[in-house]
Length: 168
Image 1 (cartoon, one colour):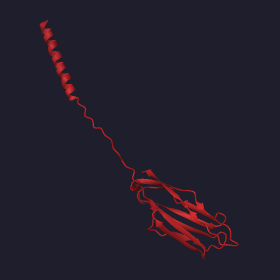
Image 2 (cartoon, one colour; image 1 turned 45 degrees about the vertical axis):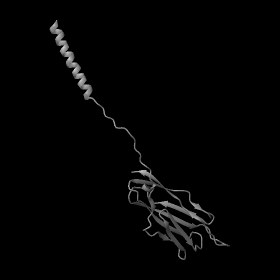
Image 3 (cartoon, helix red, strand yellow; image 1 turned 120 degrees about the vertical axis):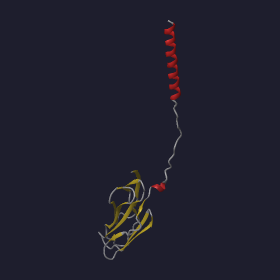
Image 4 (tube, helix red, strand yellow; image 1 turned 45 degrees about the horizontal axis):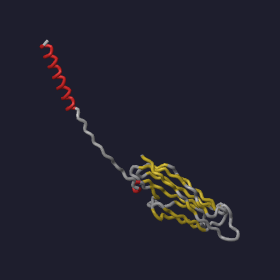
């Protein structure tokens, strides 16, 4: 019996050492904290490509002026339309220079202060730009829809294009 108690004692001691060793061996290390990434508007860069000339077409005798007045603004001016159906077209290039963001483009509500005499149309070449150097066109068309009788007619034009960032 003493021999059996001795063997059981040795087994219990071995088991206790094994459990103790396992407890010491199973240490868990944790790293905790947090991180922040800041939304920087400079990371999204969609603009008129100022290095490219604006294409202009119109009737003989009409004066067509187009200019880039900043990275996100451009102007048009149509002078000397004389009759119904005189039409001028301006083609601007829009470029996405964002390193890793795509852009969804959409023409907003066009402002035409004299819709009795003019129509304004704006069409994008494509509505999505990939990142880093992808381009599309914005074609703006101004059309005289009525011949003036008594007085010259003018209109003020605004064509907004919204570029929305999209993850690549």
